[in-house]
Amino acid sequence: VFSSVTSVLNMSIFKDQFVLEDLIQELKKKSTALSFGPLQSNGHISVQGSFPAIKLLRDFLLLKAKSLSEEDKKEESQSHQRPRRRLQQHRLTTETSNSVHDADGEKQVVLLDTDTYHYMKYFFPRIFVVNGDIVISHIADGDITTVYIESAGSRSDAGQVLRVKEKIENQSIKLHKVLRKEKIYLEEHTRDERRRYKLACKSLMSHYPSVLIISSDTHIDVIGNAQEIFDFIKDVSS
Image 1 (cartoon, rainbow, N blue to C red):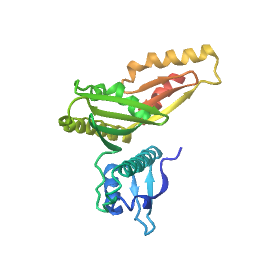
Image 2: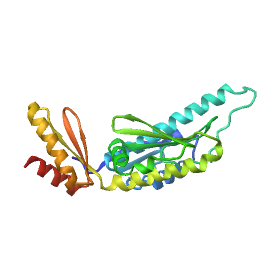
Image 3: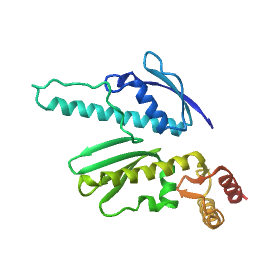
Image 4: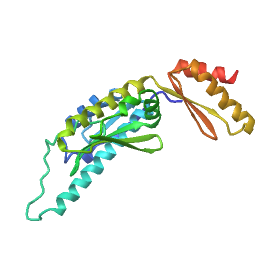
């Protein structure tokens, strides 16, 4: 298992929309778990950190690029009598993923590690409980879960939408620093052995109240802090 990986990002694709130095500073503030190298003259920059953290950063940048492309298309569909302008000083929005304004109100998008999302939903469900003016939904795609927070009423709810998004972000950052996951593989076990493993996991849950168990036909995911999941798997296997 690699505790740290390094990736080289090509930020030059954003040079027409953003001041790259400002963009990098914003990324550093939002991705505190990552270490950034110096920005090269060709727009390349090295980033070092955990694979999930780099994957979140990559998905954020992909979403940002997609959003800029959609904005360009929208501008092209407007009056051709007015030339398009790109503002080099255009400021990066402050969210972890992307903020989208639509006709119905304010929408915020947060990209989360899927395991972190499941852990938050199980142990911190109140974060996702909001009043009737705010709607939270999600789409899971492999290791990344996209959470949408949007106003069901007027645009005056934008501040509340932003506060909900920040609560989700802050909790996910705290958890991402401490959570680990191990798998108990079941493919090579008989049906009775798989059943015994799952029953053993259920019986131990009361002794490990901070450990999340997610079972499937082929494996059991054990999510929690490193020491707890080590002890948990040791007890299950004994």
